[in-house]
Amino acid sequence: MTEVVTAFTLQSPGCRTARTLLATGPVAAASWAVVLITGRAWTWPIAVPARLALGVLLCAVVAALFTAAVGRTNYARTRTAVITGGVGLVVLDAAVLVGAALAAPAVTWPLVLAAVISIARIGFTLRALPSVIAA
Image (tube, rainbow, N blue to C red):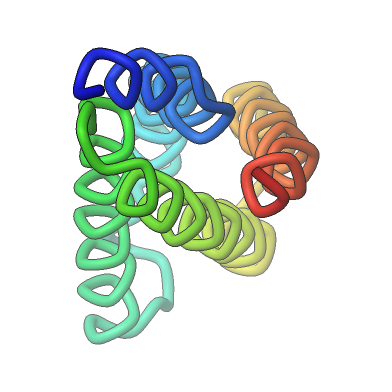
């Protein structure tokens, strides 16, 4: 019975979605790092509590997606973790997009590239979540 649960969990939409989001995370992070460094983000008028909140949200999203990606024996926990991580990821990417749009001194090609990557991840997540919720 354990083998069946493990196989089902590993092939579940939630586990596949979590693995995809974790795999694309470094690309998104690197693109935003380039934007923040080249745009001198430390000079942007964004409050320290907001910066800390985004950092905490990022850590929580990564932890939830990691839990969903490696979960083998508890399908419900995997499903809950990917739903939580997915919603958190949409909020995080949307917040970064809005913050950069309002605070960045200029629109540069790194900003456009990072925005496209974040929008693609939001789209993927919003498209994948209904199948995870329904499963």
